Length: 262
Ligand code: KIV
Image 1: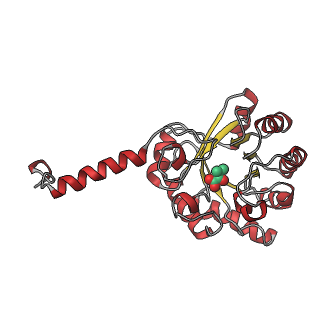
Image 2 (image 1 turned 180 degrees about the horizontal axis):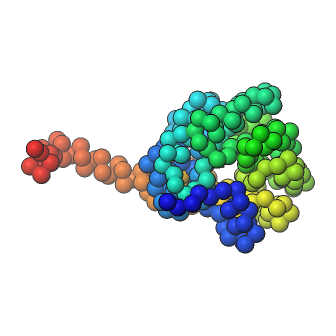
Image 3 (image 1 turned 135 degrees about the horizontal axis):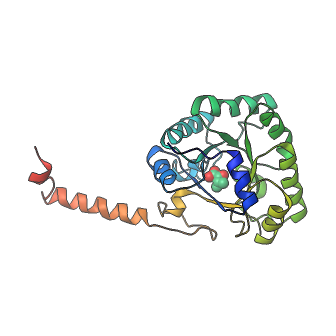
């Protein structure tokens, strides 16, 4: 049995300058593939609203859905750290609500940590959850759950605000912070300034680690990919080819052959 990645592994990787590779996953088979391929963090992201449920944004994702998906991902994983994303309005109403929902992820889905969006505005929430012994990953910059308030998915460029957010979430006790959609030089400055690992998505090469949505990375989606995505496989095309061949074989009576019959 291999040992699991913990927050201490991630701190030590930052100190040694070893890059952290993170990916999202939402189900057992892809979580298993990602874990066996050696990723350090698997985030069960609320991006599942878009890439799995086909919604236009992440806002409709519920706690029950996130707990279900995190549970099946966690069952597949032997090595990576599994982080559960707290969905929109599961931590904003009160500290009690935030603690109860964060706790649900550890109790009901075996996640090792939770992630929530926001900087200074959620620092009290991060403090309250970590005080219960639940590790929190923060998320600053472009905040998909605030898409309407931000007027769309826009790169965030206010350096003073971003640096202050990063310092506040570190002070509040976050063990790591996702930097989404911010200029590379600001992400590099944040990464130098704070002692917790930064995980970038659309934040340039100098973060302590990187994260991508698995559907984007493997070419499983028909949506237009953002500039920051590098596509490493074309699963959608391969799957379509495979299924077309199956349809043709059924119609031409080539499948099932004697080899596939009893
Ligand atoms: O929901 C998600 O997948 C995320 C990552 C893109 C960081 O928040």
